[in-house]
Amino acid sequence: WADQHREQIAETWPEMPEEVTDRPADVWEPLLAVADAAGGEWPKRARAACVELVNAAKADDKGSTGIRLLTDLRDQVFNGIDRLPTVAVLDRLLALDEAPWADMGGKPLNARGLSKLLREYMTSDNTPVVARNIKTGGTVLKGYYAADLHDAWQRYCPPPPENPLLPLPPLPPWSQA
Image 1 (cartoon, rainbow, N blue to C red):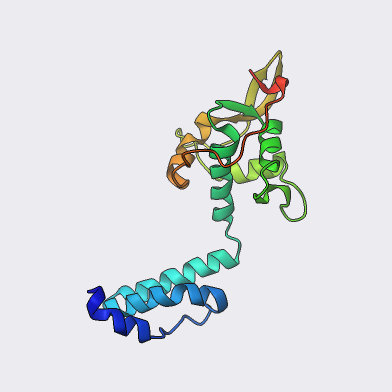
Image 2: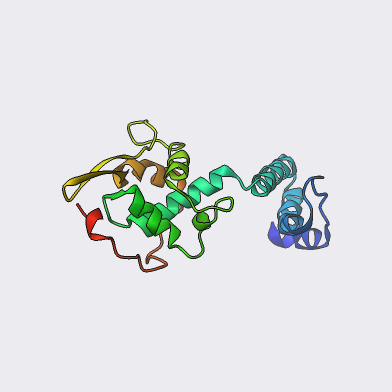
């Protein structure tokens, strides 16, 4: 099929949806050309996907921020730890160099913002992910349990990397139970 349609695809400038311009158009051009060559429902389906994904990216899709948070929590924050106080979760998130958490609308992510983002996801018991009491060295702090996030990690996150990207900062003594 590819050999039969190679020339057609290479020479075609597919019609782009009106709202798709500039860099997104450059990215989607070859995909739409292949869809046009495939025929049938593919051109219509490809353009619908194109518009949906480009609009989501333009709006800084809330879902993508949530998925980034879940992935960072799994790979960089918890990474084998079963529970962490909210303050330790935030310390670790804010220490990630390439992450958006230090500048969320001009301010660093705080406990309230973290809670708001995480309550969009459900535990395996179908209850929202919320901070719970964690006993740490004679005190009780609010924090998160990895088990509460496990279902969301499986549903929404890409496969974990073989090795963590960055070394994790050490936990303060009060955060270890």
